[in-house]
Length: 350
Image (cartoon, rainbow, N blue to C red; front, side, top):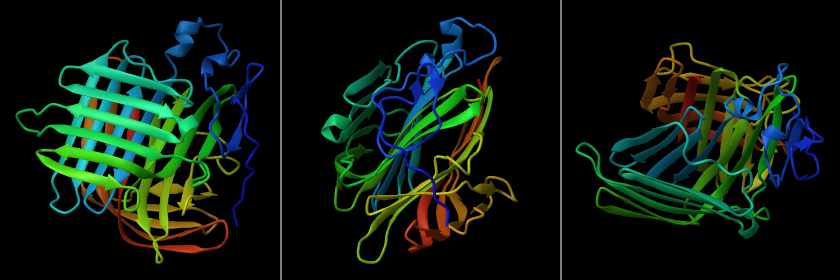
């Protein structure tokens, strides 16, 4: 069965200017990729190196009635905030997006106790990452438009390490360039969503979500596929998986794939995600260790994109159903049948 080393917690994934590669079960105190000495062969100025770092945070919150997926990106050339809301009972969904060219809000280098907020026309959000108090809080307020209802959301995630073991990784992309990811699967301690006049309350006993923080020297032509879902086993065991296929090296030794069952972390092996009939058809997600064997069937298609002279983005994020099985590090088989989740296929040139 697949295993990998979980290293002792440390303050940073960079030591004496050298990037570290590995997997940890605690967040770093600080992540500043500009501390890497000579990430490129050419002696570039600090501002030029900074333009090559892409950063984003993502949130999900789900219960039996609602699914919310939020993404906040700092791509240096522009900033983007995107929120997808889906009513699992009626099938109603709306995708909200705000793009700000040039400089603007900046994601923090620490999750200990920091916040960012953005006030722009008809679109407000605030993120307070407070791991020292075992919580991450997201506030969103989006005004109604002619085609979309207003959206207000307040979500507080319980990220107490005694309840859920997070995953932190530093992965190689080039010789001295890395990406960092922090992921945690946690209950939504309390939350409220007001959407089109409806008030949906989220409670810890029946609501869960993911919080993810990414930073990296991702390639100019970046490609990634991400699969995630949340469910319950017999006996009310809460579980969630967050699996990605990306452009990092030596994925068998370290990667960002993880499964949580009742808060216990199982690091998963690398996967191959194939789409024989394209992203609108069935996705096949498998590994070579026998721990991941899933299919994803899209139900609701969600596409967004942008094309400019120096950049373009193509983002497919269908909502659909997972079927198959996952295996924990203890050999417990998690049967998955018609589990609602999301798949994300990103092609980015920036």
